[in-house]
Amino acid sequence: MNLKLHDALRRGNDADRWAAANTRLTALAGTRVVTHFRIPLYRNGYALLVSSATTSALGLFYWILAARRYSADTVGLGSATLSAMMLLSGISQLGLNSALVRFVPLVAGLPRRTGGQDLT
Image (cartoon, rainbow, N blue to C red; front, side, top):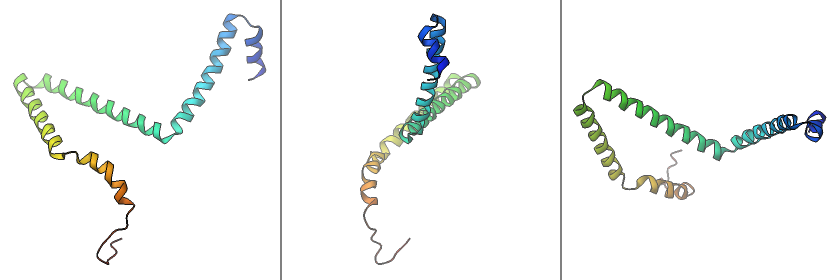
C-alpha cells in the first residue's frame, strides 16, 4: 500500500477514508477478475452463458418480428411446427448426447483395431 493511501486511511476524515478504501478495493477487485478469467473453466462457463443469452435474445427478437409481420394463425402454426420438430429431434436422439459424453473418453484411450491397417 502506498504512503498516501496509508496516511488517508490512518488520519483522514471520513470522505478521505472512503475514497482510499474504494481505491484499494477497486484495485483488488480488478486483479481478482483478471485472475478469475485466466482459469479456462470459468472462461468457458462465461462463454456458454453469453452464448445462451445471445441465442435467447435473438430468438425473442425473431418471434417479436414474426408477430409484427404475420398473422396470429401463421405465427401459431410456425411455433407449433417448430415445437413438434424439436420434440421429435429430442426423442430421436435417445440420449445419445449423454452417451457420447460418457463413453467417448473411455474409447479414446484404447488402441484402434483396423484389421492390420493403419488409417492415420
